[in-house]
Amino acid sequence: MKAIFEQYGWEVLGCEPLNQGLINTTYSVNTTAGEYILQTVNHAIFKNPAAIDSTINAIGSFLKVQYPTYLFTHLQPTILGNTLIEWEGQFFRAFKKMNGYALNVLDNPNQAKEAAIQFGRFTNNLNQFPAKDLQLTLPDFHNLSLRYHQFEQAINAGNLKRIEQSINEIAFLKAHKSYVNKYDNFVISKEVKQRVTHHDTKISNVLFQNNNGVEKAICVIDLDTVMPGYYISDIGDMFRTYLSPVTEEEANLDLIVINKSNFEAIQDGYLSVMKPELSNFELDHFNFSGQFMIYMQALRFLTDHLNNDQYYGAKFEGQNYVRALNQIRLLEIFNETV
Image (cartoon, rainbow, N blue to C red; front, side):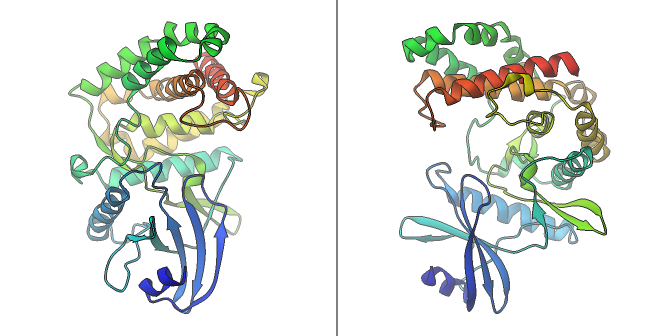
């Protein structure tokens, strides 16, 4: 680590790992010049770290000019002016540490509303930025047509025992293929705009502050998945991860419920910023955002189960099957409630 510190010109007083996120390794570094966050970029997941570096710098430069008071996680340059360091097969980057905290779980509707406001503001502030100029850090990340095609391939060539075990779930997902058709019609519509979209809007990707008992979201973080995309990705991911009190790992399907107050909080928060920017056609697909994202995740989990857990891996036999059951049940409850 000393070689990395030297490239930033840091006189380090202390360094400790942070249990922050699942993909990248993160450290808090205390220096004589202040505190920084140092991260390694997971090259196994993100095949082109330079694309992420380019994206963060491009939108950061735009925001610095157009919205100079907007709080953004600008990359910290090295002594030579680089913002991405390749060292012994690893990629490093740094940010100035912000005064705030991230949540692992959602505790109340206000947090949902605050997060939705911040994700909406992020996209809205970049409304005039040429989204098409951004590189794709994860190509086809939220391409529902591709995910359904991969699902079909797994049915034809996957683990026969697991296919037989999953016959009811396969039938359910096939019966809801209309979501794929609706997605295809959405993305080709002239009424739909590609925007700078976060694509990973879980609650842990927003920084909060608590001032005298008032909790406010202050900043969007973890920009590795920022790409050109559709607003339904960000809304859908909030619906998928904010509405139920249990995660996708929950095996007791009876615990999966929809918190309608959180739904309304997401809607109120996001649309308070983004409604003037969305066409009527896009607004008509607001609830579809949840169907789209939950259905896609169910497809992905079951596909991985049929393919012997090649993508997500599994800590125990059938973990991705449990996840698929969870998301299918969440989709059913979502459709019953919303």
